[in-house]
Amino acid sequence: MKVINVAIGLVLHDDKVLVALRQQNQHQGGLWEYPGGKVELNETFDEALIRELAEEVDVHATAAELFWQTQHDYGDRIINLKAFKVIKWHGTAVSKEGNQTQWVALDQLMALPMPAANQPLNLQLASA
Image 1 (tube, rainbow, N blue to C red):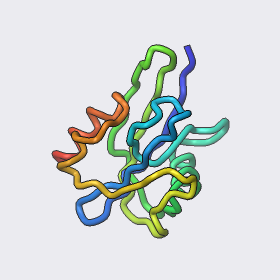
Image 2: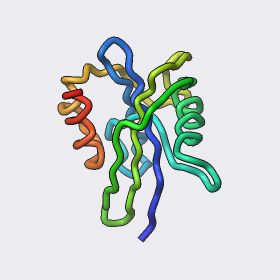
Image 3: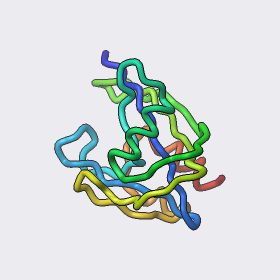
Image 4: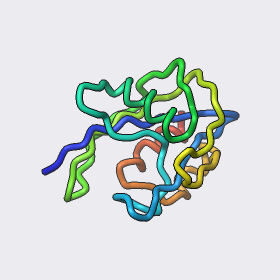
């Protein structure tokens, strides 16, 4: 089975977190997700986080710390997921790829349709 390493950023501002809507043609399309993406060959999770945030949502992370990690089996692939709390950043925090983004209050995360791998993270983030 295919194993994919993924780094995502919890970009916080005023007790809200940035989320983006996945394109319909993607795996888990039409669901909300935290910005981030696949770790490329010879790249660390930290490096992937910095690259993906800049590419996807014009967020330039200058400080981040590992907040949560898990492995999730979707049946057709296994995702090794590391979520980093982005402590310091600058940029516009808007999509550079054409998909919708929004700031969501932490206590509203469970109401969003998100990939199954994110549900335990949402609980932990909402209670942090």
